[in-house]
Image (cartoon, rainbow, N blue to C red; front, side):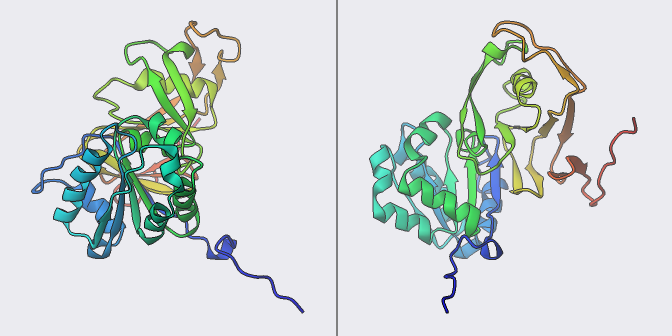
Length: 289
């Protein structure tokens, strides 16, 4: 009689990691910052072993060094700097081993397309993905590092444009937060219109626009909670009508009954019911038809 060998992929043993998705320009003042200490707490506090991935930036070592100093000031067991600047760096077994030791991985700002082009699909990137979906690895990112966490990511957009297909460029993201598109520096750079373009073409997704010095802690498939000093804009893309299937790239898009929620710190959002949750735990009921 043979027995089936258990693997880390067995559903009963899977533990999906939490995400901390930051809108950029988080406060780095030791006396007042809240978001980075929150990430450290998620990763295990003083026992945390954090891998800082500066790949989105062209100044990889500088970015990693900056966050190393910040995390060490907060107090962690170890900070690792993989210095992944080319795709073949991701084949390095020593860097893959860093991922295996980490309790959290943090993606810096820069260019989200640079991050996915260099990391996605490499042994290094695959190990991060495996551990996020199966072993409870915490993944955090700011600005470009946050935008890359969704399945589809925004790579370009005209903040001063109207709602037109030509005003937004999209590409596949890392896919840690499924059925969601994340936009950062949201109110500061006037990015409402480009989020609406995405809705017109992808009505099944949720859009999350995050202000600077603001973040959401995500329990994938369940809920997220807002922290920081700004707001999070949640767009429910289940519209009743859109002319997107027939519109040209430069045509203004029509859509009806799109919904937006604005949530400050302490508020949450139920990803299953798509309803906001008040700080006291009360779920806001849907508007009666």
